Length: 373
Image 1 (cartoon, rainbow, N blue to C red):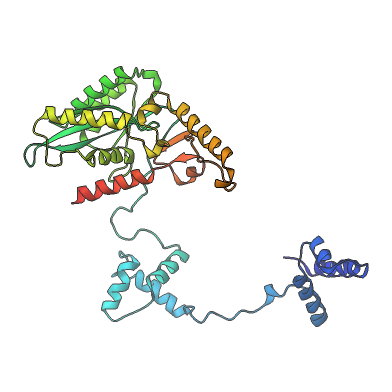
Image 2 (cartoon, rainbow, N blue to C red):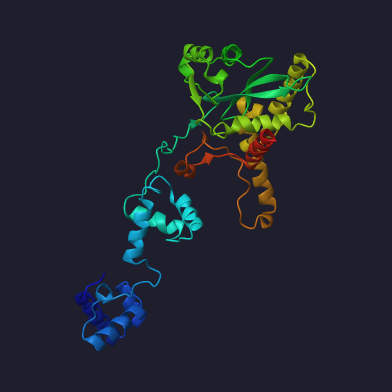
């Protein structure tokens, strides 16, 4: 806030500059004000003899909708009464309405409680608490793996085969899978041992294996195997279905293939053969939108960057031949992010983070709807 003396000095300097031939708006700009501000100060100086700001001493009328002291006191007495002390405002308001009484809206009650430092958990139940999000980052393959188990329908209703599937966060590639007729930690343990041998994973590689909270994922046999292999286990937050979103999206892609057998597989061998065909299609033929429409195998095997570089050069050549068709815009971005995050936190999404694509979001929604049905 500019003092009265500084305002008077500014008026004096501007008047002096104008008398010397300067434009008024130029003189005002030099002092960081506009013409309307200058004229308001001059008008106030002529009218009252001072250019002081009158806002601090002005009297503002009370808002017509402001609660009176009596109304505010009644709200506090009501919400803290024996009858309502354990109830939140969203329950207090309709309860009072049933009695033909209205003391204020829910938002008004919440605001008063907040102002009085009384906005806390009400009741004897445990207060809800925010669970820390499970997030990891990958800058290359074999840094973060994700896995889950899904049901494959068997020959009769109620009989299932269980698909154990492991995928890589950075490349979205399927690094391994197995189909069993039971769901337990020993099968998971055997599978992860084979995958570590297949992909030459050493205990010094600091691999992270993320999963949900199912019993096979947290079984003693599985955890002991992970510790021996030097793998760090990671689990989703309890009752948070989308903390393992990439694995859920992969299962949706699997179950919506045209040749999937929703009515069931006759034998375990038939189920394994079908999954084997799906994995081959997914790795070598499926152009994944989350990795710039490369196939997962291309990226996992190290060929992806050369392919993206060729695409970039092709687009640049097309732009060179017909620049008018791009209208000054850059060619399509054929680059991969430096870092891929599992469940990125919001503040971090500004730093080149690859989040779930629309395809993967759609996959997850479809899986949820299917499970509900």
